[in-house]
Structures are given as structure tokens and as C-alpha cells.
Image (tube, rainbow, N blue to C red; front, side, top):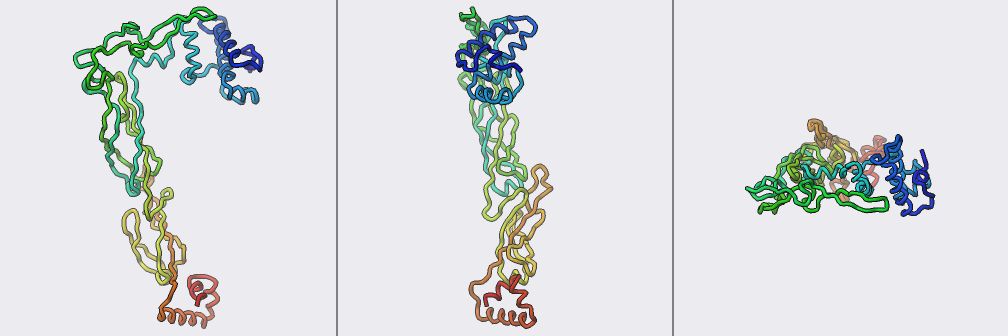
Length: 376
């Protein structure tokens, strides 16, 4: 690939003005509407790519250090819609050649335009996110004016042809430059490119054809959503202009935390506290779940920090609510700080009983009994 400095015919120490002058001269020389020689269009694209890179200080620095690999992308003219002021430069200098018109994006302004998308942030309760719910919200958005039907004109009247551009939506003006006289095509400042002007504006919308209203919507929150889930409500964004379709509404969810339950993907985690006697002997207790109070069996001999599982009591899978995760419960065993005389007597008798059977050392090393008897 040719060196970009060589393509523009400048040295590597060329300043911004020198680059711009060289680019303009070569772009005019090889523009396809002027130069019909074979290879002129390809050369025009290469020149455009070279100026795109060298005209920006950051990309120029990367090119100087790493060459084409440092700036990426294939050679050739980039898409005009992504070039900003670079596209305006081409429009200014070349829109008059060969009857070329303005860029496609500007021409489309005369026709229907789709309305903007809207974002709405919604906070939902923990259980609402688990099981889903239909929820009513109020959103401010732009709707087509029902008085004028979106025309902007008072009922019974109609827009008139713009006198400035004669309905074309564009105006042309000649500009003299060192390269000669050029014709620049621009959007009509009077009608904004529509080719029409509102003579008698609608009183309800002030001639805009749209007005802002607060609308009630009922949206369906599916089971299993989480913070960051985005719901799309088609056609509930801002109304389009000149009969264009409405945009969409995007609802971003934030799920409130639960005081006792914590979510980890499809799993719900929680803790329970049991006495040392419940852990030793076992018990049937009631625990909180997203389904409400549920019976949980504490097996005899449950160890501290043991995890008990309630299957299919977790979070439903988004899009497939039949599949649910589990509810995992960590058991905290509460050891007493003080014992009554009777409790102490019974425990010492129990400890002596195990000691007599030669099992005391085993329980000192492991298990709940060892932790208890080591304090006696």
C-alpha cells in the first residue's frame, strides 16, 4: 500500500494547513465527476483515506509509529454518514459537479422520519422480579397531534409551498474559490428541507404536528428478570415526523434487594439460626422463601454452616419459567453462653458416658459434641 504522505505529495513534517491544501488540490483533480480516466476513482478514494488518517492528529501519530496497521480499516473512502465535517467538506466542494446533490441523509429529511426511542427506568420488588407481574407506568412522550393529524396546519388549511426553495427543500449558492466557482447545495433555511411552510399553524401543537403527553402503559414484566434487564415496548417511543413511524420504548429494570433473601443467578441464598439441641436432635422448622413460609427439615446431627437445599424454590429461568433454580439455606448453630444447672448436669453426665466408652477423644477432635465438651 502506498505511503499516505506520498499519496498527498507532502513531507512527513507537513502541518495541518499543508495537508488540507494538498488534499483539496488532489481531490479536485481526481474526483470521478471531473476525471474520467481509468483509475481516477480508485486514486480519489486513496487520497480520501490518506487525508482521513493524516488529518486527525491522533490517527496520524499512530500511523507514523505503526503504519497502516496502527489505524486499521481498509483503504478507500469511509461511509459519508460517519465522517461528520469531512462529509461536509466534500459536499461543499463537489455537490455542484455533474449535478450531484446533497448527501443521502439530508435528502431523506423531506420524507417521513421515525420518532426517537425512549428510555424508562423502573424499579420492581424482589418478588415481582421472581414471578413477573403486569405493571402500570406513566411516560411523557411525543404523540401525533390529533387536531391536525400531524400536518401542523390548522384544521381546514394546508401547508404552502416554500417560496425560498420553490418546494425543493434545497437552496444553491455559488462560491468562488482559488479552484474556480463551485455551487454549494444546502438545506433550505426557511422550510428546514421539507419544501413546505405552515401558513396557518394548528393551535393545539403550535404547527409542529406533534405534542407531548403523559401516557399510561401496562407492561408485562416476565418472571426471572434481574437488574439490568431491558424490555422493549414497540411503537411507544416518540411519534415520527411527517407520517413516520413511532420509536420504541425501552424499559430498564432495577430489582430491589430483599432483607433476608439474596440472589445468585437462578439460586436464592439465605441463612437460618438453630439451637445446638435442634442441630443435634433434628427438627422441622418454618423458613422464608419467595413462595412464602415453607417447612424445612433439620436432619439430626446437622453441622454448623451446613447448606440445606429446597429444590425448585429459586428463580425461574427468564423465558422458561417452568425451569427454576434452588433455594440454598446455610445453617448457623447457636451455642449457649450460659447453661442452667440442670443443663450443665445433664451434659456432664453425657460427657462422662462417652468418656467411659472411650469415645471422648473422637468427639474432642470433630463434631458438635467436641466443641461443647471442650469447654466443660
